[in-house]
Every structure is written in C-alpha cells, then in structure tokens.
Length: 317
Ligand SMILES: Nc1ncnc2c1ncn2[C@@H]1O[C@H](COP(=O)(O)OP(=O)(O)OP(=O)(O)O)[C@@H](O)[C@H]1O
Image (cartoon, rainbow, N blue to C red):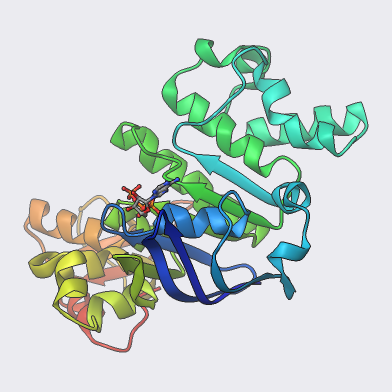
C-alpha cells in the first residue's frame, strides 16, 4: 500500500533518511523504532507529505505521492501525534468532527460517528462530548486525538508517539484500544515509538532505524531471535530477550487439555506467557489451570512448556 524505494531526505545538507526501502502492506501494523534522531518521524511525515522527500520513489496505493494533492492525501490518512494538537476553542465533538466536516458529511452522520468513536475509545459521551480540551486529562486528550485521526475512516493511520507522556496504566489501556481497533478494522497503521515493549506487543512488523537507515525489519519474533548484528541484539534487550520472547506468546496456545486437580486460582487464556511466568514464580508452582474469557476451564499450563516459546522458527502468536 505504501512503498518507499531508495528514498532519501536531507535537511540543510545533513541526511535525515538515507536510501530507505520500505514496503507497508495493506492492513499491516508497522512500528518504526530506533535511536533518537534516527529518522523515524521524518519517514512518517514523508508518507502524508508533511515533509517532501528529496530522492527516490514513494508511492501510495500504486501512485506516486507527488501526484496527490497534499490535502487529499491527509484526508485519506489519519495522523495522531504526541503533542495532540487539539483545537483549544473547539469542543471534543468539534475536534473529532474536523475531517468529516471538511468532507461535508451530513450533520446526523457526523453526530453518529462522533458517538461511535467516543465509545470505541472509552470516552464517556455524556460527560465529555461538550468539554473543551483544557477540561480533559492528558490521557483523555490523547484519546480524542486518536479519535479525530480515525474520524473519516482513513485508509491509513499514522501515529507519532501517540501515547508518549502518559502514565503506564493509561498507556497500556490506549495500546489495547489501538490493538483492538486494528483487529476490528484491519486498517493499515504506521506507528513511531521509543518503547520496545510497545513495539513488540503491537507490531506485525518492526522497522529498526539508526542514523537515517533501516538496520533490520521483520516480525517481532525475527528481531528477537535472529538479530542481524550486535546493535539489533542490544537494542532489543540483550539479556532480557528471553523475557521479551515470552511476552509475544499467549497462554491459550500452550494449554494442555487436561483436568486440573488443585485449588490454584486460574490464569486467563489471553494472558501473555510473560505474565504466566510471573504467576508460576510468585506462586511457586509448575502447573496452573487456565480458563477462557467466560471463565470456563480450558485446560492446564505447564511451566516446562514455556521453554517451547524460546525455540526458533515460532512466530510466537
Ligand atoms: N525540520 C527539520 N529541520 C532540520 N532538521 C531536521 C528537521 N526535522 C528533523 N531534522 C533532523 O533530521 C534527523 C532525523 O529526525 P527525526 O525527527 O526524523 O528523528 P526521530 O528518529 O523521529 O527522532 P526522535 O526519536 O528523537 O523523535 C535529526 O537529526 C533531526 O535533527
């Protein structure tokens, strides 16, 4: 859907992105990660032409992006950033409705869409719809920013550190919302982050950048188990890599269909193996019962089976 071929960008003669080759497939969740100043935001902004590339070929839906009017491109691509950029004198509703209004949607359709988005992002409609940005918490503002980016059902969602500067609980909740939105809508998402755990938990494909270049790209499992070099190995946690690998696997995939005879409280099948490891260690046991989302028993997780997750070739999902 979005293809970079040998794309470069320099600012005042200093390269920011060099010879970038990147293919973002429709429906894929791509995460750009890397050291500070490695060119992640520049790469993202070249996609919606907030920054124009100098050299190479950049296409969207098969067309060179220079052939689109920048406004048309931006209406087809939602954009959410850390500093939010909500309009201070507009209510939550008016902020979310920005692009639908530009597209001249009928008023009833806009109202319905705003309600739908408030619900999707867990924002209390009765309380928040008519508030102004300064009357919201930081986390609520970030959610409104994401809702605004999604409002006109864009084909692509571009996000630059959208959960930055949030406390860990709100951040995790917003990450879960985005993962849910992605699995529900199958929308193409490109997200820039500094947070390795965020990248590992959200991405279909991670692109690791350094000094304006792509150092390695692949699935989270590939980057953890088959790093191209020491930089990649160190970046993804060095000695922590086993724990991060456990974070990629879900309990449900490792459940043995057995009956549990004991009194241990059960694990939920949707937990990560990293969370399950923590339960094994804190409870000092090597077998735990597992239940599904409705609380029905589905089998038993064995501590020994966590080792299977470290075997190469498994994509961990
Ligand atoms: N508008 C600009 N004018 C001049 N230099 C710029 C501009 N935007 C970015 N740069 C430079 O280009 C390089 C890449 O910046 P970019 O913002 O893409 O990196 P980043 O990986 O997103 O960084 P960070 O993680 O710190 O946000 C940096 O050296 C930066 O200083």
